[in-house]
Figure 1 (cartoon, one colour):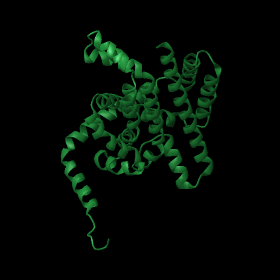
Figure 2: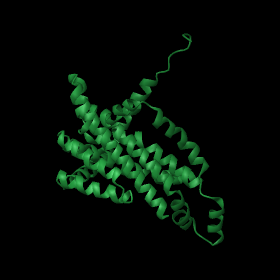
Figure 3: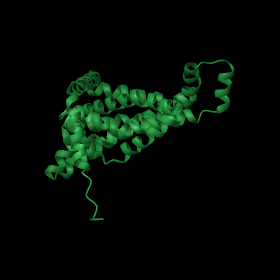
Figure 4: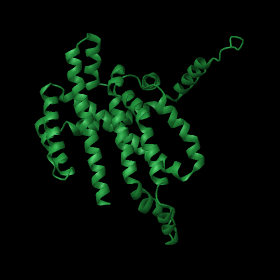
Length: 281
């Protein structure tokens, strides 16, 4: 193999990245839009004092689980513990990052999943790209994110979106493809247009699968919190990152527990919403 010259792949990538820097106006626009979304989420989440936020979310958990106390009790004591440990503001920042990433993933992921479900050619093009996005080590996404968007929350959101969007796309595509052909044929027989068929038959029938993808995207976005802290994305991940640097086992464990509590609450709440929607349907 030494007889073959080494491909200058790294040089090609560097050249491509330098070329992309010519589109500075585009990255500035994207940075501004993401910054507005992050600030809006942070502002809304920070409107309520911590005690009221905890009570409201506990009530939401109680009602979405059909008046069962299990999740509501966990939300109450879990958020109280986060507040008691002094991580409330960090949790709000983390939640802002996760929600922003999830919103962007849904805005772009669901239409892309629909497009893939409608066209085998599009599916064959995007499937390898989604495989690439999911298998590439998460740390690698930090490099282009910093090159094009600097440091802070915005590159953290960009890296989280790239890492978290594939499940939403895949499960939207899968959900629509799994809709019964008899139902689709019945819609065609009644003269439904493609738009009517999509919004009144396919999307409602695929809603449970699509929501499972959104749930997975939220969990993956949260898993990027600690990694994104390396490029200046503030929040609970920063506490873990600092604790690792200082060899502070106790501090790292406290911040880690806060992330676990937040992950469980987000996961159970989205699953409960999904089950409730499915029941109604």
